[in-house]
Every structure is written in structure tokens, then in C-alpha cells.
Length: 280
Image (cartoon, rainbow, N blue to C red; front, side, top):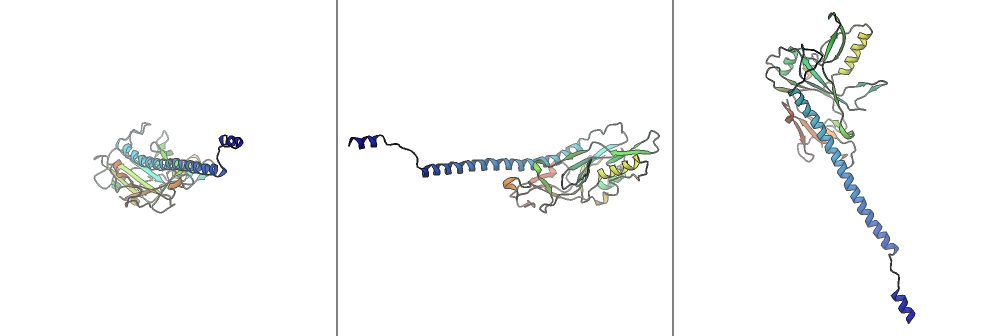
């Protein structure tokens, strides 16, 4: 009797295998939920960051056109009238040509023209009268022969954040084309024109300067002059594809450039669940 009492009094308590397994399962489920929630938050932040960053890139162009800086180098015969934004140029790398589909790099060029002119007509007519261009000739000291051509001002470039892609309204189709944001020399009004054509500034500079270095000839002319008839006032919807950023891999954000935008407010970010989102 004393023995049984001792055993009852000093009985060892613990967890059964079933209880341990249940504890581990619950703890694991909670851990997975926390990690998934944290990862989802990171994905969401990356997606928003890629969207906001591209929108700010577009808005900054309007700010620069509104407040132009000097192009320097004593080129007093030229004035900056706007920006040319090109989506889809190929880059000539040291060892190979880098395709736009491999590296979606967007180029921004200064648009310069004569100091006088402009008239009161349409934006395209204004650019023609100003002899506007994005590249300019550099002449020999004798000023009777072109030595080379170079960009008219500072060349900027932009790449989407977090490996996202800037697409058309069609899924997995990269956006290509050109955008002109220009300021009228007299009124100061800003106009936005768009074209489906890719103006190959890089390739033009390469071909021309290769010809000059080989003492060949090159028929230099305005890169914009022959393309101005392709530019129109139109609305653009840029679809930001996160390219597999977690839970958002099947969602695309719509950034809209309104027709003939006059300032940075013409760049609109459309909500994902909005009926106006044409990127769904």
C-alpha cells in the first residue's frame, strides 16, 4: 500500500508524442504564416516602389522641361526646348549588341533648336521652324566640315526597379516608341507628343562617327525632322509588370500619361482595382 502511494505521489509527468507533434505542427503553421505575411509585405513594397519610381521618372521630365538648364560648352546658338524619351533603343556594347528585351533601358535626350522662331502653330510645326534636333555637329576649326556628331546635351537613362517591366496593355509586350515633351519658346506652354517609332539615336551616332573616323562621308540631318509627322497627341497607358514578384505576379499597375500632358500632373497612377485600370 505504501509502495502504491509512493508511485502515485512521485509519478512523472510529460508530453506524449502526439502532443509534441501537435505542438510542432501548430508552431510551424504560425511560423509559415508570419514568414508568408512578411514576404507578402516585402513583395507589395517592391511592387509599389517600382510603380512610384517610374511615375516620378516621368514627372521629373516635366520639371526639367519647365526649368531648363544650360547645355554648356559655349553653344550659345542653341536653346533647350524639351526632352525626347525613347523606349526600345538597342545598345552597342563592347562585345555585343544589348537588346532592349534583355535590358529595358530608357533614354532621355535634350531637344535643342535655334534661339528664335517657333511661330504660333502646332507643336510639330514649332519644332520644324526651330530646326530642332537631339544631336548636333561638331565642326573643325575651319567650320567648313563636320568632325563628328554628338548628343545635344546630357543623355539620361532609366531602368525599371526590382526587375519589373514596362509593358503595353498587352501582357508581356514591352512598351516601345518615343515621347516628346516640349516647351513653346514664346508662350512657355508644354506639349506632349507620342510616336510608335523608336528613334535610334545611339545607332545614328555610332554610324556617323564611324564614317567620320574612317574619313568617309555621312549625310548628317536632323533626327527629328523626318520623324515629326509620326508624333501625335495621344494618351498612353504604361502597364507595370512586377515579373513574378511573389503574390503580385499576375497583377499589373496602370500608369497613365494623359493626352497632351502640360505638366507633371498629367502622369496618373491608376489603382489596381479601379475600373479604369486597362492593364488587368
